[in-house]
Length: 538
Image 1 (tube, rainbow, N blue to C red):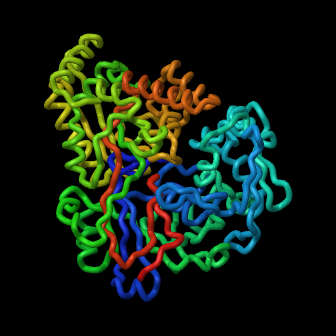
Image 2 (cartoon, one colour; image 1 turned 90 degrees about the vertical axis):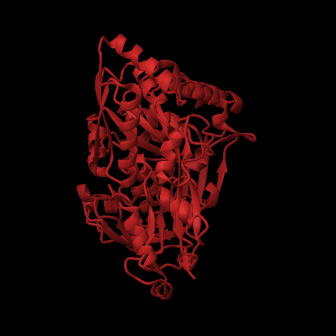
Image 3 (cartoon, one colour; image 1 turned 45 degrees about the vertical axis):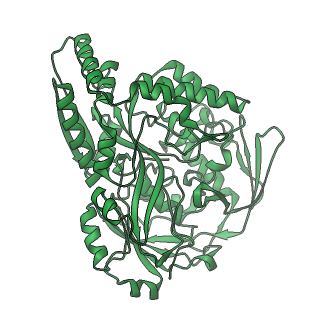
């Protein structure tokens, strides 16, 4: 689903540390008031769902906004605003009946708000990085290319509480998409009222979810979520307030936890080992992968496939996972394990052979490939720069990579840069990087959530890797009537990506947490997202 804020684009630059805190309140105070505090390793980028692109922003949206469905425990789909739905025999027309609900100003949420929201996101003027997920909805691709009017998008309101969606083709994962915040409704009144300020601060927004956001100015590092008095299911929302803050140092968070000023924290490597038997210890599978993204357009050295393969084989993934802690596992595929199953088999097992051949740890082979690459470039040495977020995990990741690459490959100089999340995001979009430590968490339970990113024309393909056969296979997978053929196309495409080292997978993201037993029903949806609707303090 999105980059984790390094952690972030996951975006990650190594897995982000998300912690539950209590902002100075003791546990007894928190219990009495039904309040707790949650922290993240990076600042919010935006709460405009048409423009959001990272885990922190989507954590805000999934708890302050609501769409047709909600993702429950273990990724299970739950009804939200949709009370019922029907699908045509050809699988191309969905009709959703909506419940009556309200925006945070008391005005009604209607089917027209979905129509407006979707049209706004696919509008080329909005420049949404996620607009590609609308592909398959009638005319969406042509609209984002500027070839069709917004009014031709395959979504319409029949009265206030009936939404009809028309597809160009069957989309196997369509309902799962509807639980992703990108497809939630937006208030046209709010967008027009706030103009360019919309989504840039708490006050420039209307909300329809369990909570409303308060106090985020667009640049500060603390804010709140407060129970939404207009939420349709407010009777099941127990928590009155969640205090958020940005915390980048795990050791500081643990000290606060020990002094009863935090209710929970994510753990670094030493903490994971020391606290594994403590009450409240949890391992969370984030459904994501940390990987290296190469700027093939900017750096001719990295455009050489043998240089990229050498970098991959020089990385001791097991050692890196041990350094970072949590329960991260060495990755040999871009698609994270556990995201997609084919019958009883895990999807990534279908690309295991290719994965092992090009993403194993071998100093000897790495050195041979590197020397071969240098010869092809006509150079005796090269210099590369690796960028990551300025979090604890981001810093540890680039330090480990710098050490391994220089020691194993020899004639390479590795420079490292760690910057605030917003700075890294800006440099990424401007193409100002050589190698970026990134992460991606699935937006829904399907390999296409990963593989779509590396198609030639995808807006998130910042490294500009391109392969025509890969593009063809991904395109074919989207129109195949056979589920087995679709899986085959996806696995063949991923094999091409791994063989050509379009990206280098590093580890599958899993984070260890210590959460006080008093905190109940806060859950992760196994796609990197935290859900607070049913939370309570015992």
